[in-house]
Image (cartoon, rainbow, N blue to C red; front, side, top):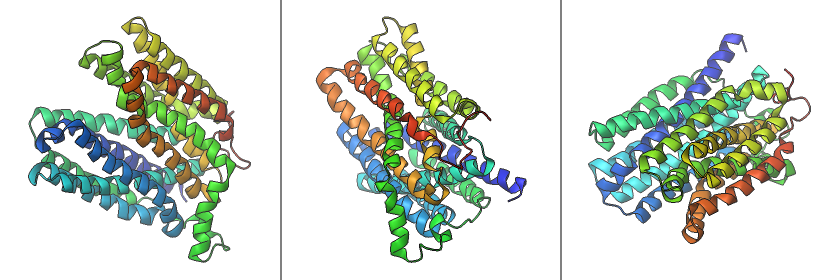
Length: 403
């Protein structure tokens, strides 16, 4: 590929990550309106979110087979339409038609296509990274974080102006479809790894290639890195504001500021993470950041005052920033198994994102929110101990350090 084509490809994937963030946060930002419009209690809101979560997990697991069978570009051309359709259905269910069942069905479709899109764009991002020969994955994830900030910001404005959920999310669905379809044109239609290998000819053999990755011990070690850091990130998104209000007896507004500090810290470290990894290597970066995340979380739990708690949260955000992207990078080191390995690592990470918050909620109901966060400290430590698995395999220049 020419340098211009490579840059266009990289820009297309940046665009996908950014607009995935926008779309995800647009929905999340309107949850209070969804609750009011449909007259739901917390349990019913939880059930709605579960339908999206279950869809996401299914999408993540299926993505592996889709990429092996048809390639990421073809798969994405279907799932980006599904994301728009799901978001539109959910919006109509909430606002125009006032149907809980339609909203749940829309969210299940949104989750399914969103989960699959997430894996496929990570597979593409890993291919871009290998093509450039340096660490870019954290920057892709920084674009996702920036997208969530933009999506949430627009959501705040829409809510303040009293714009209906269906108009707001319908608009987001239209913009998403137009821009991602345009971005897709810059992605090269490279064959999937399984199609390239002359041996994997039949459908059954291709499927076997996709499933073989689950027998590789490295998959589980990388999974441990991703699991710990996905918990560290997901628990903050879902429980940080509650920990500030219930644990540290602060106001809801202060809780929102804490979450903002966490998100900004995480985004900044994702933006500057690539050069750091290329200097000291993937393994040492992960070790240093797991220490930062663990220390930050301990400081937050034990902080006797609010300024110190802010320092803790900033460290926690910085430390949790690169576990997921570098896990994806490590999974993609072997081009022949990249799609299957990235999908497997993402599946483990998604399990943490989806199952983590309810489990933490149940435990905190028994012992309180701040004591519950010690579990996350343990998982961060596990992630740090597993960091050695992210060592680049022979032949890979990405993440080895000393560039």
